[in-house]
Length: 97
Image 1 (tube, rainbow, N blue to C red):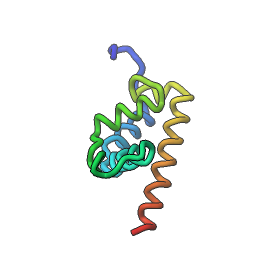
Image 2 (image 1 turned 90 degrees about the horizontal axis):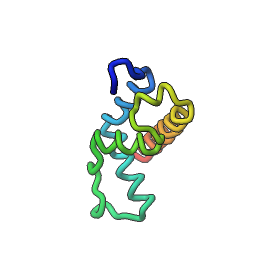
Image 3 (image 1 turned 30 degrees about the horizontal axis):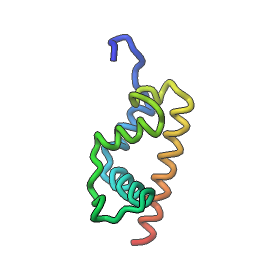
């Protein structure tokens, strides 16, 4: 990124923290298994890491960098939807314990 390029703001920071969250990485493992009909032995928990989460999030939001979340309304809307689905999954997971 150029020194005078767009700067990351609140959403970029939130996205970075989300991608570092081990629970979010677990969510991506389980989401992918469900989507592709895979077993846990085919895609074990702990498969996704911070970099995988970043790559997935950028692809899902159709951006190259999380910085764009603060400058692209469509990408920001997708990020909010992803975060909401993740939060719903966490609540469901807690209620099952």
